[in-house]
Amino acid sequence: MGMGDAARRRLTRMPPQGAIVAVLAIAGLSSSFMFTLVVPIQSKLPELLNASREDTAWVVTATLLAAAVCTPISGRLGDMYGKRRIVIALLVTLVIGSIIAALSPHIVGVIIGRALQGAVTGVVPLGISILRDVLHEDRVDSAIALISATLGVGGALGLPISAVVTEVSDWHMIFWLSAILGVIQIGLVVWIVPVSVLRSGGRIDFVGVAGLAIGLIGILLAISRGNEWGWTSPATLACGLGGIAVLLVWGWYELRVDDPLLDLRVAARRPVLLTNLASVAMGFSLFASNVVYPQLLELPTAVGGFGLSLLAASLVVMPSGLVMMVLSPVAGRLSHRVGPRVLLLIGAAALVMAYSFTYFFRTDVWQLLVANLLIGVGIGFGFAAMPMLIMRSVPQSETGASNGLNALFRSVGTSSAAAVVGAVLATFSIEQGGVQLPTPTAFDVAFLLGGVGAIVALGIALFIPSRRAPEERHPSLPD
Image (cartoon, rainbow, N blue to C red; front, side, top):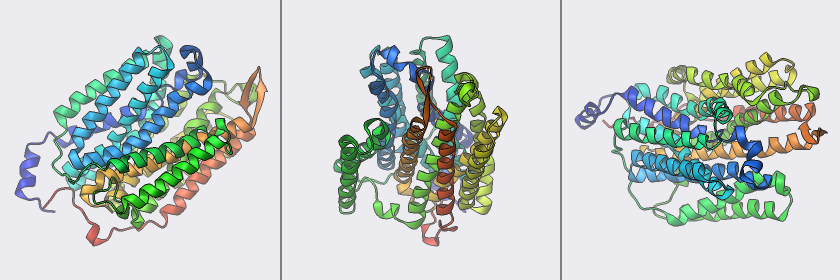
């Protein structure tokens, strides 16, 4: 593909493309790290914050809700005002939230800080869109695969890091750590990442922002808190059905406004719609593993577990993140040859194999290690494929918002997995020393559900068009 003079001049003023990819990958790692940041202290939060277990659950829920709401909105803002500018704004929000949580001895401040930390999740789809804008098309697929892998790598690597920090220091130190990471990343982004030159224009759709936020919060509250409130309780039904109703009205409005927050006509294209639906199933399958494997590893041996400490269990899970990182360049090259649809099929098939293997073989720790390596393959290929499929099907001016929407669908899958698998483990449990512990049946059902999610993703991927239409080709750099 030939590049015009303007594009060549712009490239000559850019930092090395490898440096741009590295900086955005570090930002992605840190954003996904926010989801496992408090896992080592989650069970101790009621004591540390002098609050009920129901209230401390919001330390996790607030991050989830903020991530789901802010990700598609930040993607749209990036398209309008410049992706680097919004990435910096999100990183500043991360630092502010981290400092608030680090300085807060009470639960309200920690929840506020954790909500602000959740907003940084938007840097991953924005980073992917930046890569499309600034990289040569021969490097785009490999770079996207690397950034996509950070969604799983950050959580897998972050868990043992958080465990070590909380074991050797005060629990507030994990928030100071995230603040320091945020400050470093802001400096790197300002120094290395070029200013966005592609803008979509338009205005901020404040009604669309409010409608999307209210609808998503309602649905995700019902999903994440349904097990605690009761799935048929008035609160759960009001949040869930109310959220659906708001999103239906929001969709009607977005189709009629001149400058919508999200172009739903683009989102309804077959490749985009099917990829987003597969993202829900893939996200469910990923987070089911994040919930169930650590619990099985830490469960006392008397009730069928392995009795490992949190740190030891996290070290068994961690290799899946390393596999994702190692496979990212392979995923990029493979996508260039066979297309991202094949990558998604391979990823979903690997997840099916992982859950099938664990269902029948889980008497030794090494077997769970093998399963987690397969999960690393599945998520490494699957998460790499999804943004590639999206960007082959949307205009370049819509990449930020479209990738943000895809990240939102993954969030719906992960939050659904947390609620559903959590409910299964709580339902099939026995009392041991005054504590309710999952039974082997609970893990059987959980592994089946994770496998079903992977099978659904595999089935949907079969119907995604293998090639983009000629009129939908959008080169990474203008001619």
